[in-house]
Length: 516
Image (cartoon, rainbow, N blue to C red; front, side):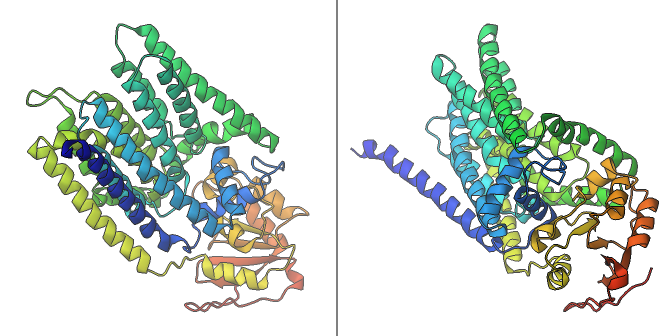
């Protein structure tokens, strides 16, 4: 009777531990609910709030992201904006923890470790650590964070199909996996992890003498992906976002952006790369990959892991995707979470029978837990002030109904926090550098009848990869300087002959009206 109860007690223990991890994940992210919007978060909210047929790709704005990310932010906008976004991000993290536990358990099962629960629990711990740690940029809700649960769900479906490769059930699972993988890529275009896993798993896990089986599995998954792509692209077209425009944004633009960055990027780009590499090393994430390398190979009479090639392929792709963009923002590291979850899922049961792997895994998870806890506590107790907040407060005080705003360049969050629309479709700086490097589009806006009421620039319009002479002349013709905030932002107002100069003051800086 005791033996009959033991598996049930083990399941209850596992469910309890995973439930505790979900609670810890929620507890760690709750302090972020009232965190100020980042530039991406605010910009995506501003784009999503007005997405309907307009003058540009997404309504009156252009952004190099697929439609499902904008749809996600549209839901957040309907749920209250910033707070709704934080709560949706919290749900994405909690779902990822649960899915990581399932992925780890099925990965162990595929490798023949049916009685070992450590794989699912270790994978869930890994997801919890990395999805609450500020070191991985997880506090920002961006495409990578939204895509993580989708990638983990797709991975789970692929592994379940590989566990039972014959019959109709695996085909249904692969159809769903293809659709889920397409949804992830329609959130962030380089998140094709599910496709990578699916192809490599089909080539390595299915019987090599059955080419027809491999091809049929890939064809079914591909059909699910293509059908999902067609439905989403068609739906986006009903809102004014054309298929050709989408292709230009998510494919052509990225190739052009890589060229511009490689030719002209400032030293700040390299500094961000060094910062991200340091954060990755400090987070302890490489120890999970090292534990996988040590345990997945053939050793001591034990065969190599069946999931060695698929897992390595996914993690390799994620590393390429994080680096290939060239901009090196911290939240790109969140994209490594599914691959690291797979690494731990493969390594955990094997590490239990080898001292080296066990020390790596247990020590790595312990170290990462401590570091993540300290980082979370630091963020939770910090004052979440941003450099844009004083400027947003000033605009709230002085702007009038019907006013509009252009920020040159970036700081897209100001449109969400102030509610001021932009007649210029480019809210981010990289699209300006790629699509409007001579600022011809901006000059037309500044010279036109719909010129913005307020124009905000840095100390100058002269930034890398830009040629601002024409735009500077348009500013001189139509705008008068109003003030300088913190030595960083120049504020201009249209129809300056009817406007008096104002002084911008904040609690930590006093500024003065400026001349040209």
